[in-house]
Image (cartoon, rainbow, N blue to C red):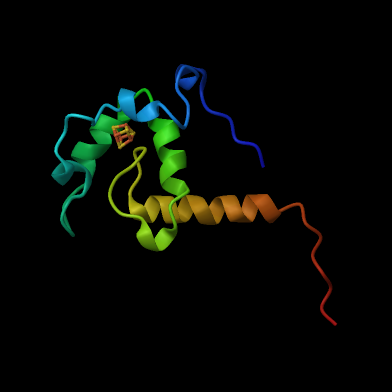
Length: 100
Ligand code: SF4
């Protein structure tokens, strides 16, 4: 399934988006909060970030077991749910085999 990025992100691509990251001068503690700490400060940076969708796609490409922190405005749990949703959508048109 082809996924498009918003027009706001068309001057960046998967190779150059990191240079425009709103978090590039922010300490990692914000984006990798300790267990039980709120991700809201990180999400506030992401909400205003010009490359949010490219960042999210990069994070979704990371194997789930290696996935940590807030990327593209999402937490690990939210990305896990997004991967599951995409897997479902990618296979939604496939015929279901009848049980024998
Ligand atoms: S979306 Fe968030 S984590 Fe990704 S580059 Fe922007 S500020 Fe950083």
